Image (cartoon, rainbow, N blue to C red; front, side, top):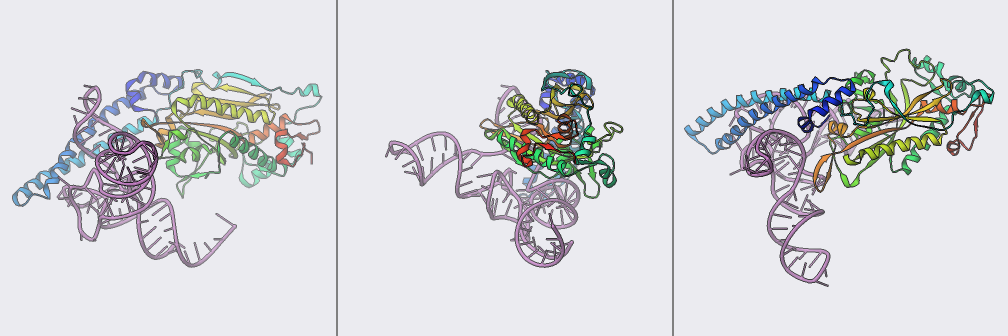
Length: 423
RNA sequence: GGAGACGUCGCAUAGUCCGGUCGAGUGCGCCUCACUGCUAAUGAGGUAAGGGGUCAAACCCUUCGGAGGUUCAAAUCCUCUCGUCUCCGCCA
């Protein structure tokens, strides 16, 4: 939710932002109109309510005719209070509906445009030349089979398409990745968390995932609960309805959780392997920080993501995501894309968003210092999305015989092994 | 799943039976001031959030877990709901 007072002051910058996203600019005017209507309703209600209260105080003291007279007056007022109160509720709801539909203000530095209009910030690492090494590239599905790390057929048998089993070395590789990620994050000042992956509507709404993204969220009808698509949800909602001490900022959390995604609207996309699945596990970073530090914190999250990709020795590039491709909560987003040799292109493996005060407002999370209570910023970033990371590791570290070299950083968690051997 | 107790302004509590200066008392914490060589102690005052309003104030409204209801009037009565605790049952 964006700041209504700010929108009132400077509606043009909100219009510009909506335009950059390719979203409605007239919505801004609808919000303004709804705001005016709400304030009119509020003052109408408050006037009668104040009168009712002051009369009400007299009732208990008055007696006889006087009392009867006051009661008669107050009875009329009571009706007016009910009517005007209902009007306020309606006006509130109308304003909320409009306001919640507005996306976060796009950072002025974000490249304007659609999905393909991102700007490449940098490329890091060296892609292997498999032709020069003298063998044909295998993709992660073949490699996973050869070393016995991934069983997609049985995943489909048991759970359907876009499901898989990690088996043997694959299962151990996940645990190694998780430990490496959690250890690194902890060293970088994050509090490790294992959060619930099933949340109530209030949490899911607060994050902003029930808007445009709703079709990709699994909902448990019988219990009115949602399966989270990322630990961002329970980590952000952790402090829902709280006022945090700004002196303790930034608060950094790193959560390991399963992620569930319906992948509606992506039929036929990435159907092979485990690149795009309905469930995967992920280690996610989340920061609560003072508004003025948010951009710096965003760079830090990106740096932590890069540090991890470098540790697993995978070539990658960083892109500045264009305005039209931002989530509604994000003001700016950087993606890290790992090189996928079998596809000969970079594919998204991590993503970090600066949500400024947008999410915190929706979740009613604020900060307090000597000056009083005010808004705070939230940011999130992937440290390790297991399945895509496994794709990147298997493909980039594959050997001519189908075995896979284990990056050194992971070896301590895999009993010191240097290779996943063909079974 | 069964039985019971309880959710009040940072924390702990009073108020709820018998509705009306209760937006709410007290203690602790915190802030300011006074006293004091310093600390401690003591005394005085202050100390929720959101909204409307104003140049700024004054002032007004909302919120006593949440949602409804009764009433001229609800922290207080009624219904539902969420959560916490105790006991029993079941269970990883």
